[in-house]
Image (cartoon, rainbow, N blue to C red; front, top):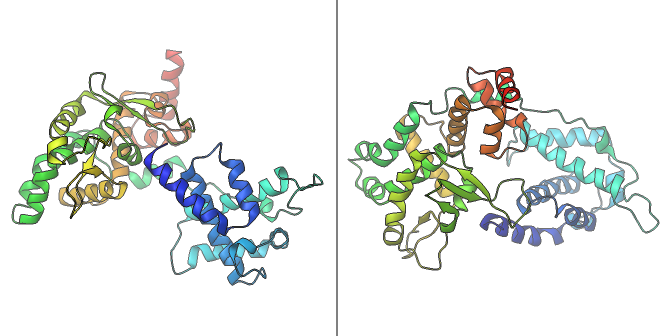
Length: 361
């Protein structure tokens, strides 16, 4: 289990007792099929929904765990419509359409389980009436729409090596007048370049980079071993190839990892950082890598570039030399539907990619 999954499982265990018993039963039912991270998202969605029911007085409960099945059975379509509006307008957070769609999908999964799968002692469904069965959740983002939003925000083919070089050396010239920024860069330039190079030459997710351990990196075969999103076998790590271009950047980082980041022998993490006030390096966090990319992207002149867009940049470039199926496997997508984005980002069409696959088979 990855570091993040271990943390999410702990948070999940803390939150479950605050929710109704039937939600706990649903989460236990889904546990073999979904990761703790995915289940934690479900739980957070249910916290918002049950909290809303209490505020709107659609239940007599005053605590989340006391919302009853009868409360759910009594809901009408107008209530779900009001909840949808609440999600798009409440002050604490403004949810994007895709987020609203996901939250409603989480509810529909729970209601489906309660009305179609779970049974009481007399073998009747726990939920007699399922208002969420009437809710149509439209697909929010089509591949071509996502591609349209990404155009102009990614690194083009000839920019990939340029950006890696900028992280390693070019940034230093831009911050030469800022002693603090220049010093920080001198310490971390090799590490940062290695991270950027690895993503731009493999398409790894930031979570996969964060969770890399020393024994996950095989320089000779240009492979890293990662737990892929959606794969629930905690004993198997997927081998993912990286281009030869990244090899030297990784070698350079490995040569200074132990000394520059005072890596203790017990620390297995590949990418390390030393926090202020500490003397030993520890695993870099997801947020640290995200902030690091934003810092370089702004100075480079592409402020919209994020760590996830580095993955998109690799995928677009990779798709130009390969078909949709190879791209899907490299990125670890569950479906080619997600990979279609890169067909719309390039001059290649879906039909060309499919024809190539047919010719190879």
